[in-house]
Length: 84
Image (tube, rainbow, N blue to C red; front, side):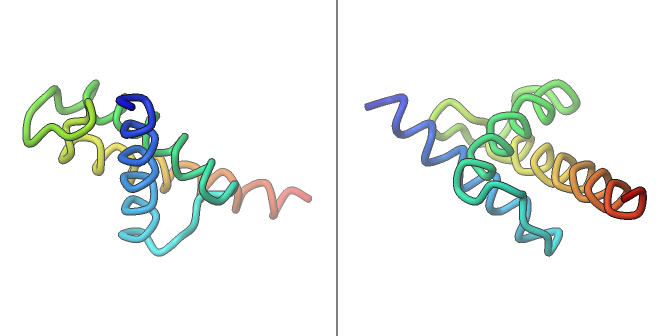
């Protein structure tokens, strides 16, 4: 049950990151879950482990990491469209 809870929280974090920026992560729900997990990892590397913890994720660093990841992915996707 803990793994499913982590997937749900990771998806919500990825969705919030895309919502704040105003861009969607490619891949739909799976993309949001991946963005949430990678964003949480990046956020905890940059900001450390602080703030409220839900489902194994520290929410504030995870959301900030997901926002950064969404910006990076959006920039890369835009660059790839220009090159094609």
